Image (cartoon, rainbow, N blue to C red; front, side):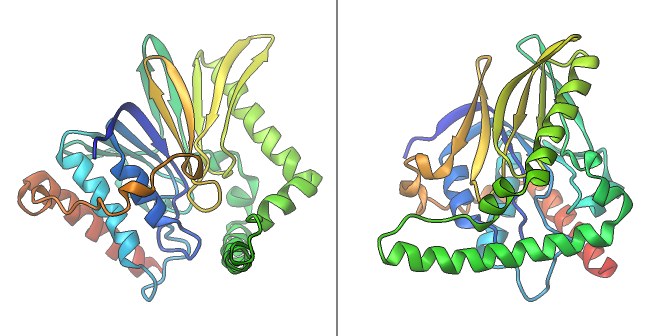
Length: 286
């Protein structure tokens, strides 16, 4: 089946190793594209909630797919987030076409794009990390409960329902936090003469134009693969927000590749070793 060639793809907040991660759907999406550059904008592996007893094959296949991209010429850039902050000790590591960084600036068709995860704006992480980790555990349990509810709803012919979205939209402080996050990121981008600012972290997919007295920029958020199942794609000067459930990607579910190059390509072997090294370090820290 023919794959779409995409100049740049941005994905964030996959949270591999948690019950809420939609790894199978993400793999279908990744199998449907051929990106020139893949940016993983934080919280890819959820080291905060890492459990030895829970890391299913579908999650491991995402890691293999990312390695496969890098071994076949796709530039893969992993930007660290808060849930995978332990990887920051490896920042600025490069192995072949795989890079690990904390932030990134690219020039896209003559315009400067600023990429970072966004946890730097989260005061709960900066000042009370234990509270943020507790909130992450509670969010994971809420998503697990929501999956059970949605299973029942779909079996009686009803539409799916998002508990967390309902809570976020009904709590004024949550809505204000999201709006403030977007405005602060965009304001800083304008001050630093960036035309695009691309974040993750808040699990809120978005593309919107921001303007103030100093200028304007395009704020983008790639969303997540817990609830929204979204990514950002850039082609020929245009950004597009991709929603998995609105795309006909189910046909790629059996197109799970196990390329021979993963076994024989030296760069892929090095990348596999790096993943193992990082995982072992994370386990020792827990």
